[in-house]
Image (tube, rainbow, N blue to C red; front, side):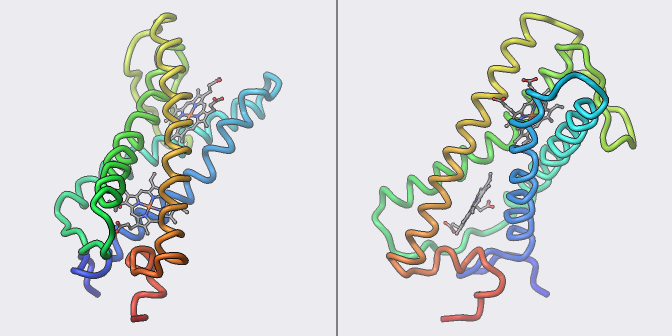
Length: 184
Ligand code: HEM
Ligand code: HEM
């Protein structure tokens, strides 16, 4: 099976990262908003640990995804006004930036707050800094704002993809969908 992207479709590796990471984001973002208001106790600690483990997984996936993507060609975009092409590419770059900023700021916040960090109870990760109350406040702010911007960009990005598919009726969405690949 060809793993690489072609002139008309994104390859299966890019697609697997794309849709797999969307699923993980759809899991960990609701957990993030839900967990803060839980009463203190073991269930809260467990759900924080789950959020952090999925977040670290997303960070690792972002690094591998970016490395793979740097070696990929980009399928030729469907005909569209120049500003839309620039907007789409700028959004993709910003999404990559946020895929790093959000988990790294979470990790920094966790470290500055003096909490330990484990990946699915399998191994410990080091603290990025010693406990630091001032940094903790900044990192938390970056994490929360970063997530809000990420959500806004993903919504805009997904709406644009659907607009291309249903209104412009071009091949943009199909280029990222495995099942519809062969359709003209
Ligand atoms: C892409 C990965 C991640 C996403 C999308 C994400 C998302 C979120 C969201 C939506 C919240 C709630 C924000 C709010 O209340 O305004 C949150 C909070 C939090 N996240 Fe993450 N997060 C990610 C990675 C991480 C990582 C890797 C860590 C730590 C290692 C982490 C630690 C935390 C902590 C400690 C909070 C709670 C802040 C509080 O107590 O209010 N997150 N995250
Ligand atoms: C329902 C949600 C989503 C839909 C419908 C969607 C749709 C698409 C489509 C159709 C493309 C191809 C665009 C083109 O070739 O110009 C694309 C590319 C891309 N999307 Fe999404 N997407 C979604 C969620 C996400 C999420 C959550 C992220 C990351 C946080 C993301 C990041 C990207 C990136 C970076 C690209 C460029 C290709 C790459 O490097 O992976 N998308 N998306």
